[in-house]
Image 1 (cartoon, rainbow, N blue to C red):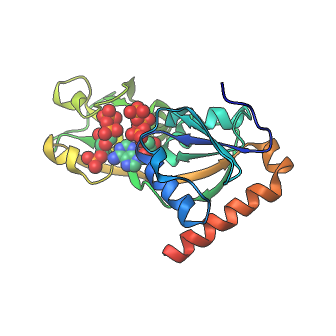
Image 2: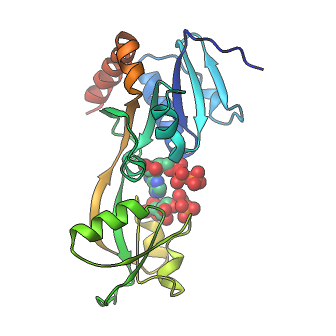
Image 3: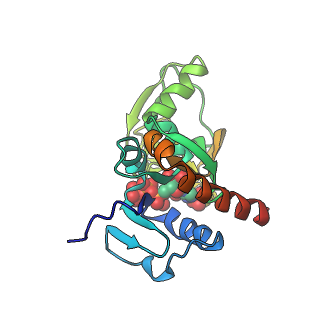
Length: 214
Ligand SMILES: Nc1ncnc2c1ncn2[C@@H]1O[C@H](COP(=O)(O)OP(=O)(O)OP(=O)(O)O)[C@@H](O)[C@H]1O
Ligand SMILES: O=P(O)(O)OC[C@H]1O[C@H](OP(=O)(O)OP(=O)(O)O)[C@H](O)[C@@H]1O
């Protein structure tokens, strides 16, 4: 059992594709994070030299840990922040893990009445089509979203595009871009007041590194 150390700043770190880029950014900012943690299966990692404890979370859960204060700060994609709408401070655009949220479909798609839209992001999709004044039926899926228009489950999808390779290999096209996505540093509202100096110092270190990288 790991000993709970209240001195360590608790950081909700997303497992998966953001982690490598986030830990590299921390190192570049002078925060000592070993690079052998990438393949670790440990869920709570104490980093006394950095004065931190990493809580290795599923990306979509990061804002929840931060809102409830079990993590002081966290790193999360703007897509998840928009979808989860949690009560947290968004402190900094880390400019990593860039991609975009788009409306996607088959190239010959014709507008229909009350189209079906499949997505992992039902709140984002509903808000987008509401703003467009379009009535749609949103179908929540958890992955392989591009299947939906190919097999007739949905007319269109709302999903992430990074390189465009998934679209290309499945004969799909981007109809509209909804917003650009990068990862953000977020903070618990109480932690931000109580541990302001420490959190602000991390913010400043990261900000300086992001600016230097251009
Ligand atoms: N090509 C991409 N596809 C999806 N997300 C991307 C991509 N490129 C960057 N990202 C960013 O990476 C974040 C985390 O993606 P990742 O695939 O690791 O988590 P996830 O979608 O929750 O995966 P899983 O459900 O397998 O845990 C996304 O929320 C998004 O901000
Ligand atoms: O433009 P690209 O570089 O091809 O990246 C976009 C793809 O990557 C993500 O899927 P992911 O790999 O997370 O798998 P998933 O379908 O299980 O969500 C996303 O949902 C797209 O399918």
